[in-house]
Each structure stands twice: as C-alpha cells, then as structure tokens.
Image 1 (cartoon, helix red, strand yellow):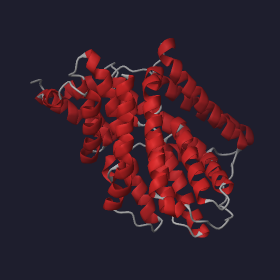
Image 2 (tube, rainbow, N blue to C red):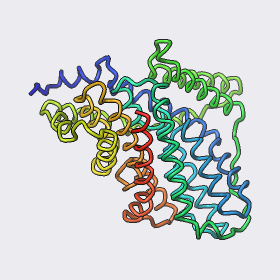
Image 3 (spheres, one colour):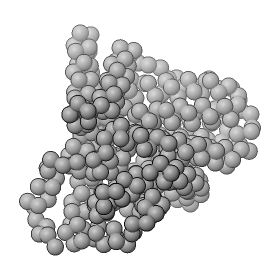
Image 4 (cartoon, rainbow, N blue to C red):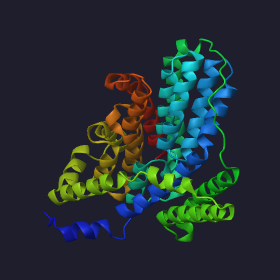
Length: 386
C-alpha cells in the first residue's frame, strides 16, 4: 500500500503523463468553448430552424432530418451543446404544430450521445480513456467509426419502430421560431477555427504536438481574432464573455475530485482487485457491459477514471479491447438513467423548465430500450474488428 499524501496527489495531478487531468480538462473545455462560440453566433439555432422548415408536414421526414443533423453536428462539436440548443426549439415547434414532442426530444438525446463516440473530442470520457491508453486521434477513429455507425443505425431503427404510430400522423405546417446568424464574419471565424483544430488534432501525434496544446491554441487564436474584429468595429465582444461563462467549469472540481478518489483506491489496491474479477476473457463484452452499468451507479466521468486504472492492470494486448469497450459504455451508458451522464441531468432540467414530464422510469423505458441494443451492436462490431 502506497502512502496517500498531498505530495503524492500533486505529483500525479501535474505529472507529464497521458492521464494528466489538467491537460484533459484543457482539451475538453477548449473544444467545448469552440462549440459554445458557434452557438452564441446562432449557428446551431439556424441549423435547427432550417431542419424544421425542411420537414414540411411530414413527421417522419422531420424525425430523420433531425436525427441526421444532430448526429453530424455532434461528431464535430459538443453533444451537450447540441442537446441544450435543440431541445427548446423542439418544444416550441411541437406545441405550435400540435404534435407530441417526446419522439424528437428522445431522438436528439440519443443521437447526440451515440455519435459522440465517433471522435476522441466528442466526450470528456473519450478523452480521458483514450489518453490513458496512449491512443492518438487517428488511432481512435480507425477503431471507433464502425462501432459508432452500428450503434447509430440500431438506435435509429429502434426509435423508428418505437414511435412509428406518432410519426405516421401528419402535422401542421408551422412558421418556425426565428433562428438567424447574428454575425457572418464571426461565424466564419468560428467554423474555420473548429475545422483547423479538428484537422490539427488528427495529425498532432505525427507532428509532435499534444492535443491539449492544439485545442488551447485554437481557442486563444479565436478569441484574439474576435477581439481584433471588435476593435475595428468599435464594439464590445460580449460573445466572448458569454462563452467563458458557459464553459463547463464545474467539470474541473468534479474530475479532479474523482481523480484524487481513484488515486486513493489505487493505494488500497481496489482497481487491481476489480481487474481480477473481470478476468481476461471476452473483454469487449465484459468491459462494455460493466462500464455501461457502472455509469448509472457513479456517473460516466468517475467510471472512466476508475476503469482507466482497472484497464492498466491488463496485459498490453488485452488493453485495447477493454479500453474501447469502456469508451462505448461511457457514452451509451448515458441512455439508461439520468445519472449515467451529466448531459442526462441537464436535459431533464431543461424538460422540466419546458413543462414536460419525463421521470426516472421514462428515462429507463425509452433510453434503456435504445441504449442496450445499440451497445450490443457496437460491442459485436468492435469484437470483430479487434
């Protein structure tokens, strides 16, 4: 048993390693701020507005357009931001079109938390687990694309089956809520910085630059460009203040606290004990199912911190299947209960504010019925790949 002292904690927090929590936080918060900036300019609201207009009077067309739009945006931005932006639009539109909002609300939540698996930047759990396993951006994509597609197609199929009666009903054509780009110049700046950041993250391991530095540099560059534009226009860049205000700062004490907790468990030998319990056979299914369940006991972020230590107890050849199965569990585990991820808790709060009742058992009924088949499909494909 190691001595659990303050110097031991600080040494691990600031160690120049893949699981340095400071670097992980900088990477995730920076990429989230890039997404928030686009939201502040009105980009996501504009796309939501276009999606609603394109649907006409067909609920099924609206459903499919919404699923595709949310899925594509989530891959390159932040699943939390997409959920927060699209949910109020759906509530407004459904009330005016006199249709049930539930199929679309669930679709947004499930699409956002399924396709967030595709890239390493889609979820803080992806970042933590992948970096703990020394997996780079392209190495992550090569393995996770097909399992993500499998999970996405299965969840889409199930949602179409689940809501087939509601989607077969016509709806009234509605003049959707105003959604426009507030500043085209800033929008271009935001999109360019996000695109460049994504490309640089993909090649960062080949040019010897760490991903957190790429993300941080992108944000600082975007803010500098925005300040220059604002000075030229003689205006106050209020969107920057709103971006900083909306950044996920609550994740900092949460992740650091979980990191310290797992360090204490490591000193007691708990992760090594769990590694032995899970064994070394059928790693994809054992780690996929156990991480999926653990998310709903302790939330997906602490689960990821704990499982990264558990996976470190495996042999090198065994780490890859266990690691990627855990990543899938950390994303899809958000479906089963509101406690599976912070996104679930935020989403329920928004629904309550919109006057929509969606309790714990509703979450289990709809989310669980979609999440479990999606997880099984993803695990099967991952097992074939690996």
